[in-house]
Amino acid sequence: MAATTNGAGIVPITRAGDGFADIGDSIGGAGSIRYAQSNFLDELPGVAFAMITLAYVVASLVSLL
Image (cartoon, rainbow, N blue to C red; front, top):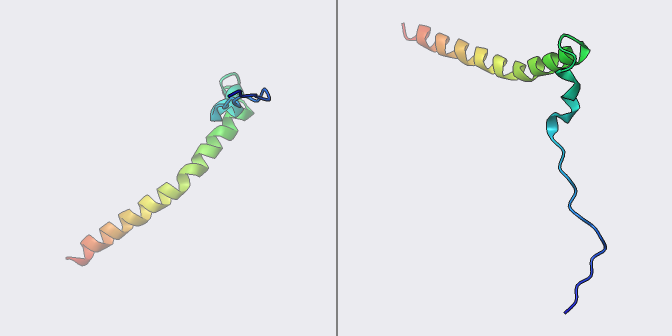
């Protein structure tokens, strides 16, 4: 039994952080500001959920009094 190949290989997987490679070089530059803004916007849903949960817990405890 003989097998033939067409020379195809495995495609290398690139790291997700490669797009931000210049951030280390430009500390305080436009790249790091965009990265910081992106991280801040990613955290907003969690902060909103935490505030709503905290308000619910406080309101529940106040209603027990």
